[in-house]
Image 1 (cartoon, rainbow, N blue to C red):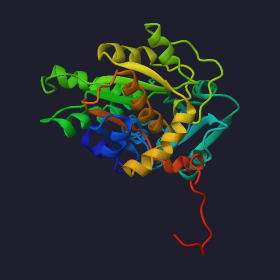
Image 2: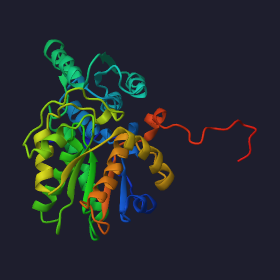
Image 3: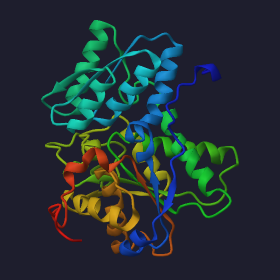
Image 4: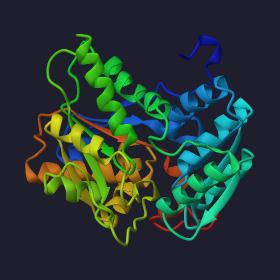
Length: 336
């Protein structure tokens, strides 16, 4: 049981829920909201899981923690490891965003780059844990990361309690722990009798070129198969098979939600559109979730009268190279 004295924080949580009417009008859903997780420490929602996971590791006397990552989780756990005085080892794909590699090393983590995907990085972490005494903090290998991410669901309740809760929540799904955590929070609040009325339909958003959850959902399966040749500009959702895929699918089915795939060209276009219409520089994963709103609205799955919440899981500043200046930047002596 974690004590109050054991709390470890860098200021995570409390993400704002931003009304985005101009973006909503463009997507055909006027009552559109964005949960802006990019304001967390290290720029993503990963800080929530790292805060709780590292706090408990410190309480248990763990000295070395290792994890595989697509990039952002490594940055977050490295930061909280530095704050906790715990050594951090990170294995990530060699083609992960460059900024996330630099971020991990800036916090003092040991970084191993893998010629492969996150599953290959996971094998290195598992072997290091067995042979060299690292604690393996990979997704769902310990219970505390999900408890940290569950706070997103608690904050949805807090932000909308006493008024109309979102009819639909769209979440970019790689490992899917955030979606699992949100649904866990909602289920627990409902069991306590605090969440009254309807529940939001949960939507898992993936890339069209890495969509194992979508494929499983369309087949009404309970688990996904490994996606071959996974590739997408949204590194955080380039996960060929999520360890907790069955929990993601359960949340989708229980909420009458769905899983949808978005082409990278739509994601890239939405990365340009969201800042100009909502003032939020979204990460590619969040942009994919916003693009899915328009796609589901066109299909009639989302109604124009519904309240829709898009979870932007991180800041687009980490992926600024994906957004070209349009129009091209002018020389310093040009007029506006």
